[in-house]
Length: 149
Image (cartoon, rainbow, N blue to C red; front, side, top):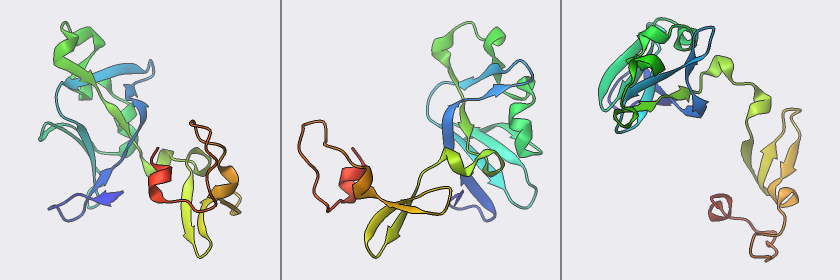
């Protein structure tokens, strides 16, 4: 989580892969098109808020409720007749739903960059690299630009 600028005690949640599917039947949910959705966590109340285009479009008393109640969202598939006016909602990366095995953690060490494995072991990035798409062999020196490809 990172602090949401300008609001004390409010943290922005990163978007996870995939879209929100709510309820026992995992129904796709929608918000008005345009802009990005922003998930915010209010540490004083424990609420999770969904903002889109600068406006609050849904709030949840508990983070797990994000996936529980399709009518809490602006629309579901059955409500949408013109999909050009609506967009799916990216899932929030809720800390309670992230398992260590789901993410790669890059550690900056005295010896360079390494992937911190779930076991606690560190694997140097250079051991994970293979020849790049243009068949050039990467040197043992690696930069942030190399990681952004």
